[in-house]
Length: 294
Image (cartoon, rainbow, N blue to C red; front, side, top):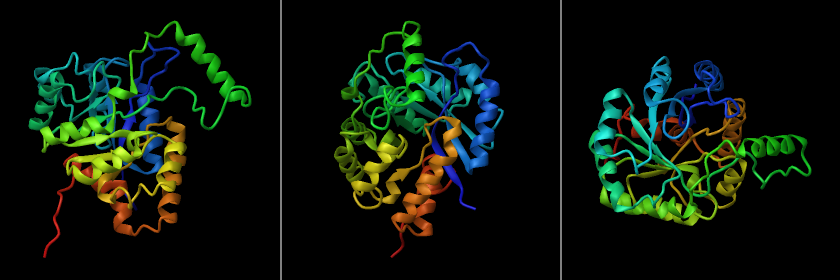
C-alpha cells in the first residue's frame, strides 16, 4: 500500500470557541488522516494562534508514529536562540506565514541560518492567504452554505486582530534569495506558489536544488497544476510534495483527486511514490536520498 507524507497539516482549532481543549480535535484529525491513508504528517503548531508551543507539543507527541512537530514562527520575534530552543523541545521543522517584511529580509537570515545548522526544513506560505470562502468556486448569493460561512466570518471579524499581511512579502522569488544564501537549508514553498506565481515557482524549482513545493491549496490550484503542466513537465516530480491543508473531513477526497490527477498524467509507480512519500521523507530525514549511478 502506498505511503503518504502530508507536509501541510494545521493544528486544529475551533475558531468560534478558541478556548476549547484542542486535544480531542487532534485525536479526530489523526484518526481521520490515518483512515484516509496518511502515514506521516507535519503538524503545524503554535505561533500566533492556537496553543502554546509547550502545550501543542505535548499533544502532538501523543502520536509519535504519525505526527512530526513543526513550529509556526514569526521571524520578527523568533531568532536563532529561539529556534535552538524549539529544536531542543522536540520541533523538527518551521513554518512561516503572514510576515511583516519580505521573507528574504536580511534581519530574518540568522533565523534561517540556525534552521540550516539544525537540519530543520522550513515551510513558507506563498501568495495570498486563504479565507473562509473560496470565491473562485462559490458565492454567498447562490449557495446557502457559503452564506452561512460568510455570516460566521462577519460575526467573528470584530473578535480577530487586524491582519497586517501582504502576498507581496510571500513570493516564491524570495525563496530564490534564501536558497542561494543557504544551500543546505531544506526549503518548501506552499501551494505551488499560489495563483499569479506559478511561473516564478517553476523557475525557482528549476534551478535551486534545495527548494521544493507542496501542492496543497484546493481544486483551483489543482486545476492550474493540470492545465499548466506543472506536475512533471514545468516542475520535475522530484521537486513536488503533497500536503492536505484542508478540513479533516476533506482529506480523503483530497487524496482521491490527486490519484485521479496522477492517473490522467499516466505517472508510473516510482513517480507516484516520490510525490506521495519519498520526496518529503527525504526532506525530513526518513529516507536517504540517492544519486544516479553511471
